[in-house]
Amino acid sequence: MNSHNSRSFYRIDVMLPCSYRIISAESAEKNPIPNQPDANYIEQYFLEDFGELEQQIQDVIGEIGQKSALVATALSALNNKINFMLQTIDQKQLVAAIPQRMVNLSAGGMAFQVQDEVQQTDMVDLLLQPLADEAPILVRAKIVKIIPETNNPNSKTIALEYMHLTEEDRRKLVYFIQSKEIEYAHKDGSIGAHEHHHRD
Image 1 (cartoon, rainbow, N blue to C red):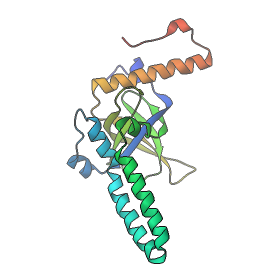
Image 2 (image 1 turned 60 degrees about the vertical axis):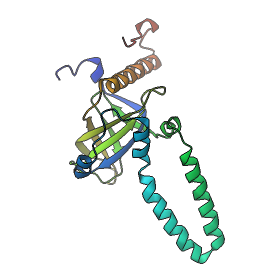
Image 3 (image 1 turned 90 degrees about the horizontal axis):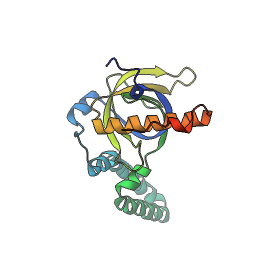
Image 4 (image 1 turned 135 degrees about the horizontal axis):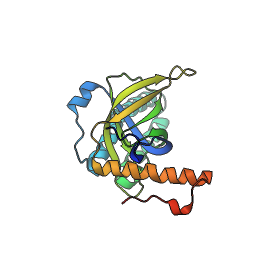
């Protein structure tokens, strides 16, 4: 693509609802993302980790039960309450639970800071919600580079390139980026109201 100076390739530092999951190359191969993931798939995918957590919680409650039946009972009740609430979550609420993250965003990729262990061969699955009233984007990305933080050895920035972004999802990102550029420009007072760029 030599059109990197076109508007859709602007990079912008912005807060974006963004969840991510780092996966190994092997795991990525075994678990491809469907072309058009539906709400149910997305929910299952990002709630998968709860299975392991649940096991850990049960084990710990078991151990605590040996010391204090009362505390164990209270923890079990709390855990059941949380599980009950999770079962009643619908996708709108799941999306509302996507954490806001500061990212450097373009229509072709993004970069952000992580504390996780990560290797150049890993893939990163991203759940993004650029537009509140539209379906979230679930996309797999490859790691272009890993930039260590000089003053914090645990922290690094990962630069990612989306692998198969649908036209529809690209449109959402471009629209989000353009609306943020306009918002920032208004804050600087350097743009007149007549210069709004709306999508076609």
